[in-house]
Length: 290
Image (cartoon, rainbow, N blue to C red; front, top):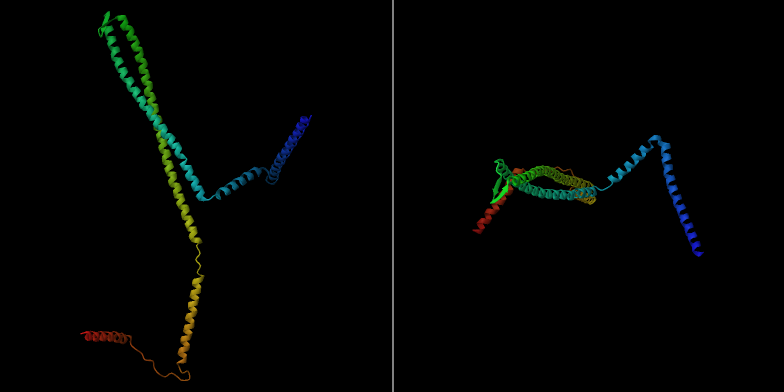
């Protein structure tokens, strides 16, 4: 009885949880339906187009917000992911080359066998055509009927081998064409991978140049201290000039009219006198040393 009550309560809990989940699903679904209905009322038949455009716009916005350096690294990874496919094709080429070598050996063996069989068939046919009843080969005598039967068997085998040789040559041609095609695809894939690597490094260099340019434009030099130093020097210059003016004024008699003429010295005479006095001093020094 207790077990039955427990199972009954358990089923009630499951039923209640199921109803709660259904309510949540209906709530979410109803909300989405309400949004779609609102869009339909606002935009009419263009509602779907607006939704699609909005989703695309958000997707593009998110994509453009991804750092360029991250995208470049992702591109490098995708280019590197081409390498396993290249290796797989290289292995395929190697296996195909081995199979073609085996096929070449098989064809050579068939060609040698057919050449020997052709000689034997022609000899048997010639011996039977002579009309003899017995033919001797390597010291053993055979009847004409035995030789004829052997000739028929040899000829059937020869025709089968010849047909097999033809098929082997066709198979070789097909394998050679396949090998050529795979080699072409591999060469194209390798060239494309190299080109992509060059392109991604070019893009990386351009991105680095843009970053350097941005960094240079963002550099701000604080010239306030330089301006302060210039202002201080200007102030000192003004003060000293003022002091000099005051000193000159103190040495002058402001209550008298200046009537004296300033002595003028010719620059040529001044230079000649200066260097002439130096030469005279040097001559005196030389005489003193003597």
